[in-house]
Image (cartoon, rainbow, N blue to C red; front, top):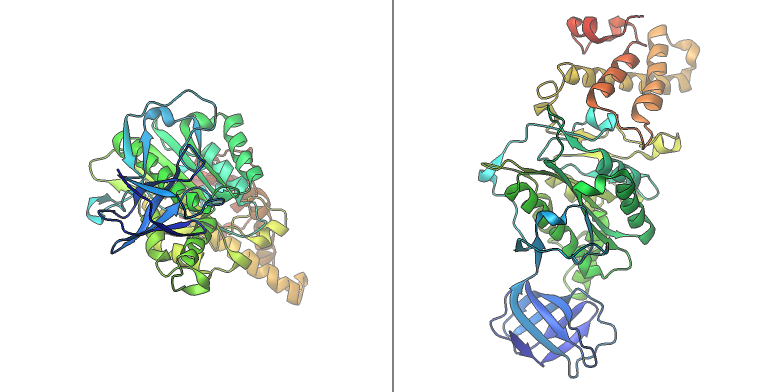
Length: 459
């Protein structure tokens, strides 16, 4: 290890060290502050000539350049991995915080990782059941997909996040869930919200198959940048070395991007849109593109990033860039939330681009047709409802009135679902047929006659 006493400046989370040589990007650094026994950790963020910029994982308050030393370890930030991680809770630095037994790692892996080589990818063709009808039927989550949740301030995305973490399961003929795991990482959430997620997993028993990383709003900003990479490194180990199907839930990615902006500002970089760094698209892709299936590997990584859109603005840089990289999105609707619908998933605004590869192929034969009919009938009902506001219900015919009644029931019974209710895909499809029975059969133009005969409840 090389040690230097040439700390030139300390600005926020950044420490500048002069006169260095042989230093590499992402190298782990121990900063020794006078009067402190334990070093503070950081990593090399930038190297230029003989000068290194160190990004600290801990606060730099109380430090000064005089007598402060920087020790370059020659290693990147790593995390110890083994199957003993399942059922454990860690902070954003990867240290256990659940008072459990010491973990003996099988190996130590660099958290930086790398996006999956497109040539090595296999096309996702199976699904993960979340137990939420509006997701499973209308916008199916495919195993190996990256599908974010777009929400807004004050909307119940946290409850949906917890519900998915508790209920998610892979399709298995035997019902064996031992090959499924959850990796959950909170990024800059308030302490109360992080604890809610923790208790939700513990009380439901889902913690046994989960690895949880908790980074709260009180933790250092720079730690927030490392936390999702730690979570994904653990997921890659479980999926590609242990053959598990891993669902990674990351929230809130907006807080992650705010951390990028803060560090970029401290480095005095030229800002991009709304002050975010110009390289944010590339940075986000290094996270999102670590999901998928690999040729020759049994396991898969499915990713659900959750982000809040400031002012519900879809053109904000964070949702905008996320939408370019990922394969669709779930939209949380403020309009439905005001109606008391929960989870208020906007099935019309949401999209799963890979859903067609599993609906009716890996799922029940009627899945794709039921989804199309529910979508079309709901759209007609909403249009008829708006028309009734302008012209009055007396101006509508019986078919229009039936569609209005259907759309109201669809929101009340199908989209709205208590967080304790875990519906199988078959139960959700049967519920869809029950609601379609409210409409005249002549209006069911998206389903084949044999499906109507087989599945539509008789009046």
